[in-house]
Length: 86
Image 1 (spheres, rainbow, N blue to C red):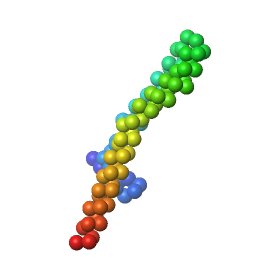
Image 2 (cartoon, helix red, strand yellow):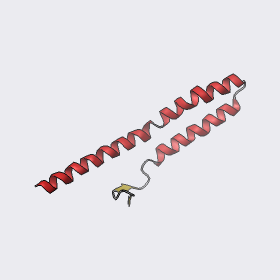
Image 3 (spheres, rainbow, N blue to C red):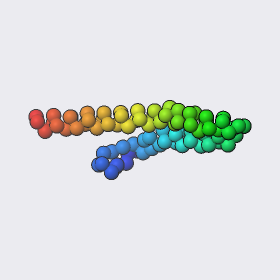
Image 4 (tube, rainbow, N blue to C red):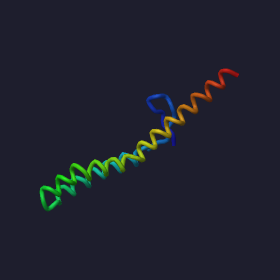
């Protein structure tokens, strides 16, 4: 099933939602881990070190998805330009 995006391109419904869902889960799990920490130092380490690292690794599929989408847009643009030249 395809939908029309704001930029006029057809996209499959649900693209990227899994990656966004993964990042949201990491944020929720970081909050839970901070609340379950025994000492203030543990909570601070989880919040300042563990949370950003987990969010960074969780956002990698989202960045990959956006990069591949941009590459496909460039390929489509080049194909359209070549079609108009011929």
